[in-house]
Length: 196
Image (cartoon, rainbow, N blue to C red; front, side, top):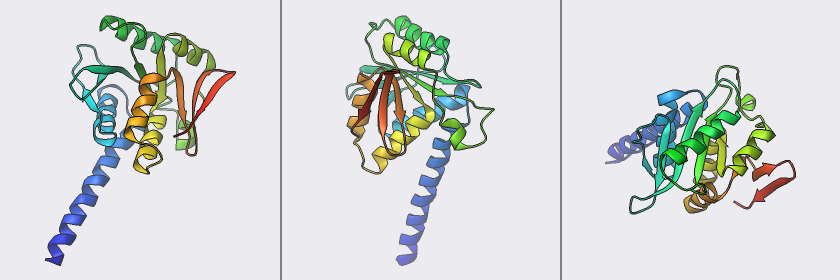
């Protein structure tokens, strides 16, 4: 019986390892592979209900318990950093989907895909003028690194899944998630620490 228990435990560990490999794809992929990885992190990692069917590419929806959309998610992989056009595309996605301008809209961006050699390269600041543009247009930007760190907060019980969802659907600007602390950046003089 002990051997069967060990085999079961190894299978569970192997399954978690495979899931973490998928999560790591957030840092290296773009296009459909990135969208698939984001969908898996949101659904498997956080446990959110996600609608991945959208007639437009690189779009997802977060759903409530009865299947109604509570946030739109625009996913972008880029060799550059955050651009104004990325924010505009997220805003246009919301408009095309016939949601009001205040409807929660997330822009998940995997920046600097080809030019990064390390995780510290991924942990660079986003252009302030584009963050301010996102805040004015009701868009919350997260780098894929921020999303993974937020998942780390949830997995280590630093915050609940509901707290993470509340932040993601109520804030605008940039959700900058560090290893030790989390901030919402809206402008140079508007950086709010979050108690997560």
